[in-house]
Amino acid sequence: KGIRDDFFAPSVFQKDPKTDPEPFYQASPLYHVNGDEPDFLVIHGANDSLVRVTQARAFVARLKEVSKHTVTYLELPGTQHAFEVFGSIRSRHVIKAVERWLCWHRATHQKPARAAASVAEPSASA
Image (cartoon, rainbow, N blue to C red):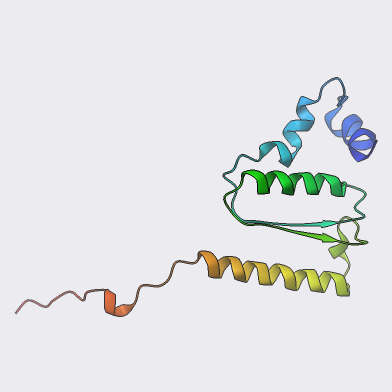
């Protein structure tokens, strides 16, 4: 049992996942992975009590299995859900890691600017 059974099932879905699992599958990102995903950076706390770390690991494993793109996973030891809400050394390091990943992503996928020499200037008619 966990947050799904104790909170989401009775309060949000108002269904039992054992007898009516479909709404729970539809709400899970794991069941929407189809191989068309872009590069992914997944960050998850190892001590997350809202979303179990095993769910993040399963999601990342599925992404890596079917994706043609880069999947990066950062699992943070001793970290709870929404750890970044309060500033800390850990959250600052994660922000720097996200920034580095985004810079890598941009550098990897940015189309190079066309060189001025390769663009023909229109000729003036005489």
